[in-house]
Length: 125
View 1: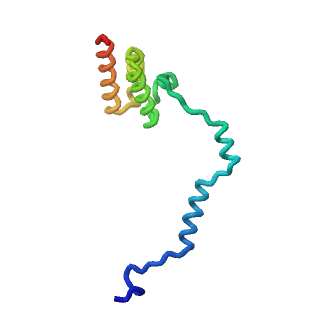
View 2 (view 1 turned 45 degrees about the vertical axis):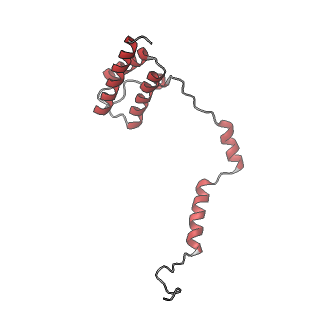
View 3 (view 1 turned 135 degrees about the vertical axis):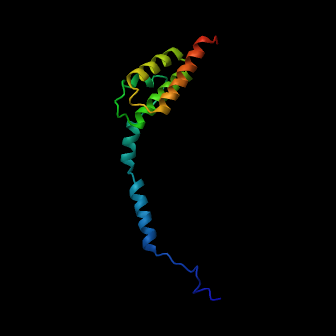
């Protein structure tokens, strides 16, 4: 069998490889001055149990997935920090004011958190 004319004898031109490298370089290219400007303005986002304070309620009827995820994250955070009464109050406010914006799965999940928070409040630690 002749290796020069084989089926797997494939050559890649340098132009295609350079195009891919150029595209990646343009996408990731950042000057040192740009990096330092970003570094000076960067502040780490610290979430310490107050995500629910930044959520405007009621949610609009056409609330997107990001808004709904933010509500769920706020409830989970309150539950994690064992702030059960605040979680109950927040869940009730969400369910009464924004029930049209929520899908059934989200309503069910909020209901689970509501019952768990109420159970935890009744159970001594």
